[in-house]
Length: 431
Image (tube, rainbow, N blue to C red; front, side):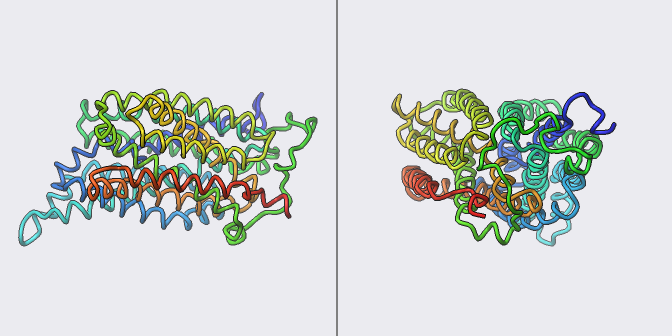
């Protein structure tokens, strides 16, 4: 099918396929691995601290690899890289499904019998590969694909995709738990691998196109026209390279804001039962708060999608950082009604703004030519932060028997970033 032959703009097919790609990244996301935690500890003979350390090392390692993958995106295009990452994700899932058998075989070859070191190294490699292929490259490629096909409607496209992703991510643990109960954890990973191989890889090859210009089209579709007044914050005067982008103050304010939220949200999600216990919450009650938080997140994401073309992105980033401050303050006072409301609303606002801004800012501020390299650098920081967060929270709890100090830091960091936001102007406006 020719992209120009449809009755409506082909970019919306890109949004559908990119959204599906983000859903196939779930096995590499924190919530995708959380349901396997207890199983892996028992199967591999690892303590909770050892498994967390393997998770951190694998995640940080994948984050350090992502800048290169961003460069590869610019060289070979999002279509090819998405196909490759989908195939790689499937192969990693097959590897994880056979992890127990691989460990047993290797331990049988050791002179001194079974060793937990073997399990640590095997799962560490698994964490590295799945975080790189699924959470890293698959997410980055699909998000960039939307960014290259839309301009004025980029926020709307990301918001529509974000709504589907948000609700699907919320339902993922329940679905994965069903697969485990029905087919065992090895069967669950094998099924996910097979689906990724036979669904996602062909879908990316058939639907994805790198840019609308390659198809004889323009961003947003020809019907968008130039009838409305152009927001000066959305005009591209020059294409920035990654080296030029990282020398700007603006890049670091946005990248560090995204990285902080990745670190903080992964950490409190990972330790939410323990945090709830510290404040007297039952497990079911504290987990139930994720539902209203998701609703707030979706509403904010849709709002950002609607308003972004009418305002400067730094005001949305300011709202995101203030939301993070409110959410962390809410966690510190979770045993009060005001604290509970702050936790839900603040983190919901931050999460919704993150979903929109992380796809909006890089093509708008630095252009599309080197989008892979620039977004890859940001994704590297985000992934590394997501690996460090749970470990930082866990160590604080172990050393002080409370989360208070790390939550205090979680207030101070976004508060400082909120102040820096006032100077985080679009580099295109000074070009």
